Image (cartoon, rainbow, N blue to C red):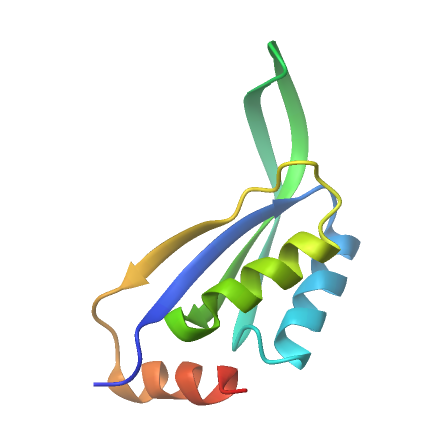
Length: 107
């Protein structure tokens, strides 16, 4: 069984910034790949007020071994004061794909 693969999600204020940060994280092997989904509409509570915003969400594939380094790098690049960074464990998947993710994130 390959190393534990994680799906990491984060939102960004616009597609250009999402693309730039995603490219950096993949280039520097913090993530194997990133899927950028434009034009989501977010409603959230921030500092006691209900806010709405157009955002972009990115799905990153990384590994548990790279999780802390991925998070530290993403936080250093992210413009939000409190960026959304959520991890989901991938319990099942095509073993060849999961192995590719692990190999692509190996430092």
